[in-house]
Length: 117
Ligand code: DGP
Image (cartoon, rainbow, N blue to C red; front, side):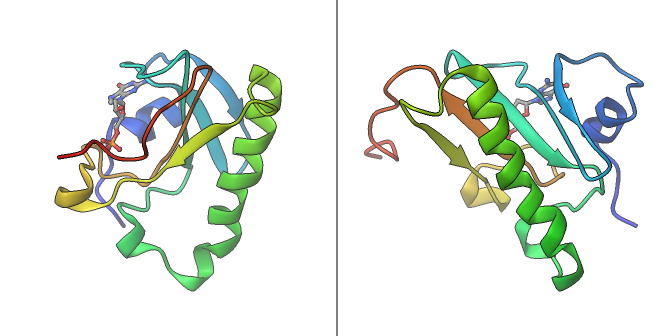
């Protein structure tokens, strides 16, 4: 079993978060350090550490991350104008929390996809 992170405690509601969605497979809550007016993390309830650890048996769960992202984008009123989904992986990807998660960012024009350096 993967090492648990703070996200598992959020999923189990052992520590507080601004949770916006939860089902049997995924949980979504607002990022504690928002980088845009809407910044929500969508995480599998199962603690998959990184994309490198995603297995064929996880494909339904990983697909659910995207359909829930679309649902939340509609709820937050950002679907029409658009938004960005980001998954960081590993050191070069800038991943801080070792529990795979999808960042949903929107509510303003987000500019270039990457910083220039
Ligand atoms: P990443 O760099 O992709 O691993 O992003 C991790 C994000 O998780 C980062 O934007 C801040 C957020 N985060 C870290 N700890 C907490 C927490 O305890 N609560 C919430 N809501 N967000 C957290």
